[in-house]
Image (cartoon, rainbow over all chains, first blue to last red; front, side):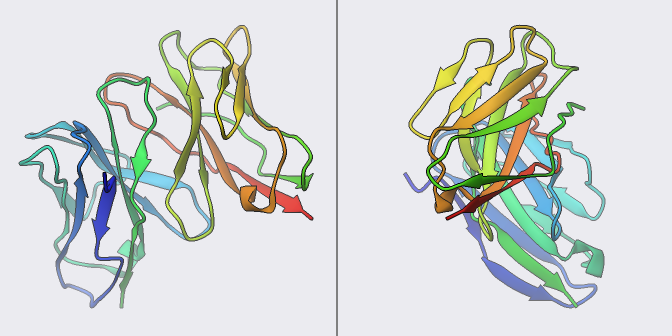
Length: 113
Length: 110
């Protein structure tokens, strides 16, 4: 198992550009999550999904969009990049029961200039 | 959303036990208590979780108070590689959202 795979690992965007952060898991997990982490801070939940075709907003969804067409993939879209979106982005997944731990990806470090 | 309270930082000496406390006074009876740690420049890593009983695994032990309003993560012999930010989180509801606080930064001295 590869676990949770995030691509790219690093990216520099110009203000106003768009990009998609990819997240894929091969564990057949229905529950998937996107977080952002600003320097020296804890993680903030952006969006989450409890299964294919089902997504919902987290704590900080503004400026982002998600889709979940398959169980494996949960991409995060930035439409008009802003400097405030400079952050490290983490994707996570979990089995259907709360009685299991969550698996996190290694992150995407995004800089908007 | 679910909130926990942890000390901002703690120090330990290498090869000594470490007890990391967490308060979660608003926890409900069906919420699981999860602990994760984050090493510098890495994603969070699962450590341990539990519901009511104390739990042990190869990484750590989790002691849960009888009223479930607090818990303690126990690292039996701290190593330099255990230096990290430790997050205590309780998972509430059927969405499984993990709501992170600031965590406890553990420093391990040789």
